[in-house]
Length: 59
Image 1 (tube, rainbow, N blue to C red):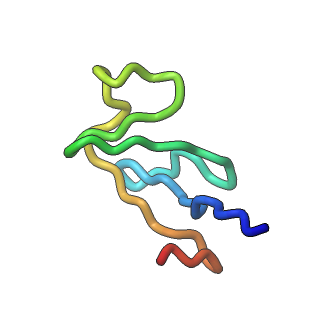
Image 2 (cartoon, helix red, strand yellow; image 1 turned 90 degrees about the horizontal axis):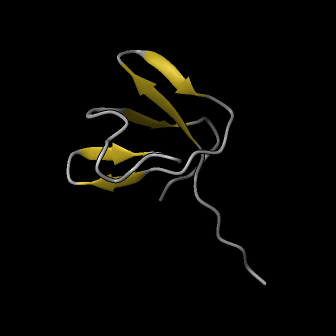
Image 3 (tube, rainbow, N blue to C red; image 1 turned 60 degrees about the horizontal axis):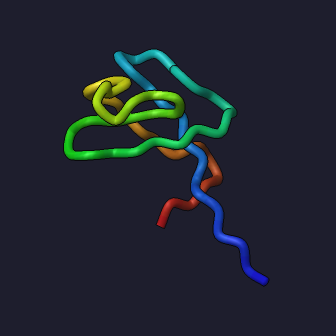
């Protein structure tokens, strides 16, 4: 059996790490990003930078 898992990301906002070494689910709708326990009508942040952690292949 093959199990496909999502890549792990470090989430940065204004140059600061928001989440590191943790699991985080993000929903992207247009230019808005939504996280856990947030209403889809209230975006967490408008602009974030997602960079894959070393050793993680995202393709």
